[in-house]
Image (cartoon, rainbow, N blue to C red):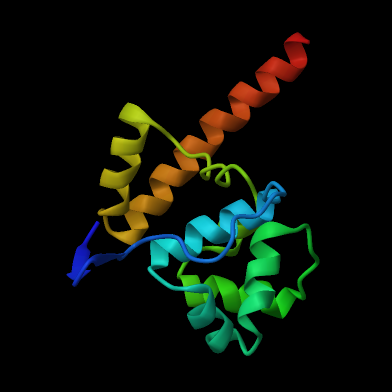
Length: 139
């Protein structure tokens, strides 16, 4: 925190301004505040870019509210975060894909010529099909 002294008074920078709220933040408000602070923007800066008043951003950060879809996408662009980060508490689940050895093999296959990739895909599909049908017959 920076402190600048003017005669006998001190001015503290990075100090929270305004009066503290007595109500807890909404879940969306917490995520919006966090994203805004990570972007290094003030409420006034976000408001100006969004075309609303600063007190609107303050309200959104504090109270449960409904935003228009275009407001959420614009906020996402301004704050440079995915829409999902603003809307959901937990990050979206990563796409499921192969892991470990299989991932490495598939990455190597992707470097082969297209014709060889197609042959390998046919063999793998046949094996998976046989395995799947084998489990259906056993059940």
